Amino acid sequence: MPNDQPTSFIDRTLSNLRQAWSGLSDSTRYMITGLPRPELPEDDLERVHQQMEDCLTVRSDEVSARARAAGLGRTYLALDGTGQLRFLKLLAENYGVDRDAVDAAMEAVRGAEDPDARAKAESKLRRALEPRWRRLLKRFTTLPEGVKFLVDMRVVMLEHARSEPAIKALSDDLREMLAAWFDVGLLELKQITWESPAAILEKLIAYEAVHEIRSWDDLKNRLDSDRRCFAYFHPAMPAEPLIFVEVALLPDMAANVHDILDADAPMGDVSAATTAIFYSISNAQKGLVGISFGNFLIKRVVELLKHDFPNLKKFATLSPIPGLAKWSARTLEENGFELTNQERKALGQVTDGETDADLLKSALGRANWYDDEHLAAALQGPVTRMAARYLYADRRPDGKARDPVAHFHLSNGARMERLNWLGDTSKKGLAQAHGMMINYLYRLSDIETNSGAYSADGKIAVSSSVKPLVRD
Image (tube, rainbow, N blue to C red; front, side, top):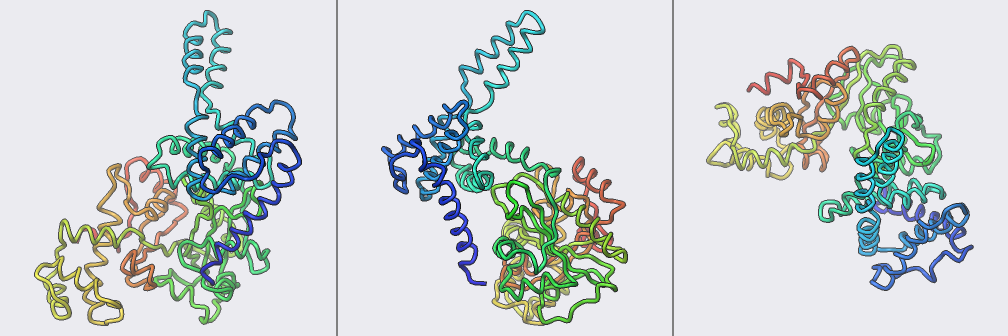
């Protein structure tokens, strides 16, 4: 797929949004004269500040309220990165909680002399604790694509949250608002097929975050009769997938993603399929980070697949291990790694190094090492053990798995089932995990038990094939 594919449809979306809001804002006196300069210099910033105030002064005139919000939205869309940062800082620093009002409301609660007075004082306190920016942001939800606008605005907030505490507070509060609006009970699960609207298919290509979709033929292969793709949608964003999962229907558990993605491979016989492999789960909306849909998505998809294909007995993933390479590089540098005598001898014959860690670093640093039969064979044992140690033994301070994909599936009740050597030898797979992949098994009878044990105590369900690797 052309590299500019994601940018092209995003640009079209923004253009359509500007045009849709133009008709609303330009028809009234509430649009500022001309759009601001992209970097939002100080004099333009003052005008934007007044725009924000105008948005909050509307009381009963819905037409004016929407027009003012549309004008402010068009202003934001006209800004570059610097201008957007200044816009968000203005919003975050000037429209938070009114602390004087909160103090007064708290005093009223403490001074209430009867239950009725206290109830009224508590109600005022709740209103005082709500940041003013909430009222302003809610204005956008009445506009066409307004919810999508807020989701995309949070992407920019997240980029600056670490360095700008005020913007972090704004981002966290918007996340709470979005979590309420995107309750899973409001979402609709749809199957995506080759007959789905072209705009949806185009977004599937752009949003695929695990295994790049390289062409329309590649996409068609992933939507063939022995494959399934499902996505969650929200009524306020009917043309935007929130999260989607790609599934392969196979006779057994897959160990190599290239076999699944091979467009030239013969089509599988779905009537003989006993295993559903979830080989890609992608969050399509970065602005919804921190709001989890994956747990519900997997369970719903399993239900649909069991209904359509009663022969399916096993539900598993073929998952990447995105943090392994960085972790192993740090581990080799700081703590070293012990090889067996046989591994040390095998690596010593094909590479150089004074210590076991040096041998591993030298071998993994060679270009195309995975194509060298002897070198790959010598690396298989130690790299597989490192993967097991990373996934199972070396935890975060809270006792949970360090790897984000592992944490996701373990939280949802899966079991670490099997590590797969050279399961993904793409450039990305080698860079992030030395080609390693893992199957997480979703055994329906154990999901709730596994999920509860992991969430409460950090206990990881692990198969008999993985556990010995951890001990070694």
